Length: 470
Image (cartoon, rainbow, N blue to C red; front, top):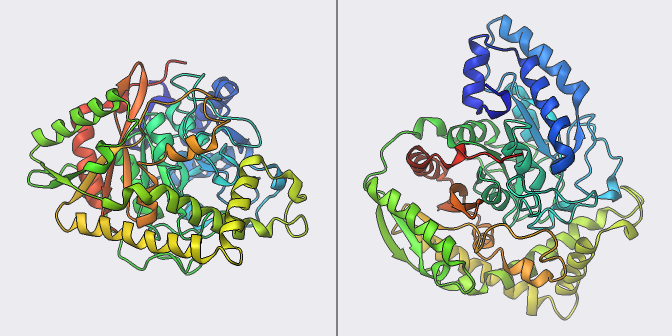
C-alpha cells in the first residue's frame, strides 16, 4: 500500500501492528512532497529536520507501549499558525523571515497527541482570498486539475492532504477558508463553532470571525482531530468554556428521525450551476433514504449577508494589520499585496469618522439578524444542508481581475461565519471530473450532529476514495 493513501485511522492501526514505523511514514510523506509539490506548490516551508527527529522520538514511544491518538502521524500547518522555530509567513512577504518562539495552542495540542508537523502550507496572504491565488509566494494548484484553483485561503493545506503529502492539515475559516478548499479538493473540512478551538498563536485576520479547524480525508479522521484541538484555552479569552464531546463516539449512530432543513434562499440563488443543484439533490436523497426527514426552511436575511460581511471583515482586517508597520514586524507597508491593500482601504473607510454609523454599525445590526435567522431555523431542524459553492472549481486567473465576483462567490459560506455556527464540508460527487462539496450546518456547539450525519453519508457514498490522478 502507498503510505500516502492512508487515512489517520488506517495509519494508526498499522503503526500499532508494527507494519511500518513512524520514521517510514514521515519519510514517505517527505518523498511525496519532493516528488509532486513542484507541480502543486502546497508547501512554503518543509520541516524535514524537525519532522525526522520527531518521528524517531515517536518510534521510541511506540516501542515503550505509549499510546497517543496521533502518535507518529504527519500533519501540516497552515502558515497562519505559529510554529516554534519553524518559519511562519502568513503567505505574506512582509514577514517572510519570521520564526515564532512558541507554538499556537492548536499546534501544541496536536503535538501533545503525538502528531508530527511536517511543514507549513501555502495560503492566500493573511487569509485574504477564496482561491489560493493571493499568496505572495505564488498560487497553489488544484490536484484534480492543475489549471484550476484549489480554493482558499487554506489552499496548500487542502492540496497537501488531497495528494497524500500529509494525513491531515490545519486551516482557518473566516468566511470560507477551510470549507471551500475542502470542497474543491474532495476533502472533509470542519469550521467549528466560533471559540470551540482556541485562536491563540494564529495570526489574526478578522478577530470576531476567525475560526480554527482542519482538513482530512475522512469524517473519522476529522472528528478525531477536532476532539484533540477543541476546548477552553486560558490564553484565548474568546475560546469557549463548553465541554467537548468525544466526537468519534457519535459516528455510526443512526440518523433516522433527524430533521434536515433546506434553506430556500440558497437553492433559489441566481448563478448556481444546474449540475451542482443535482449533486446536492442526490445527496439529500441519500440522507432521506437513511431515515432523515427533509424540511424546507427560510433564512430571510441571506441576501444582505455578503454586503454585511464585506463591511465588518475588512474593518477588522484594517485594525489587525496595523501592527505590521515595518517597525515591530516585517518590512514597510509597501510590501502588502493588492488584496491586503484593498481590504485595508475598505475597512478604514467603513470605520472612519462620518461613515462608522452608516456602514460598520449598520452591518453589525444586520449580523445580529442573520444569526437570529439561523437560531430560528435550528428551533425546527437539527441541521441545514446547502451547496458549498455555486460552481465547480474555476480556472486560475478567471476571477483575479474581478474582485467583486470573487467576493460574491462565497455567498453559501460567509453567512455561517456571521452567525458563528459550525459547518462541515463533505465530498458530494464530481462534475466533469471536478469535486463538488456539500455543507452540513449546525447550531452552536453541535459539532457532534454534523459528524453523525456526515459519517452516515460518507459510509453510503465513499466519494473520498476518488483520488487525484497525478
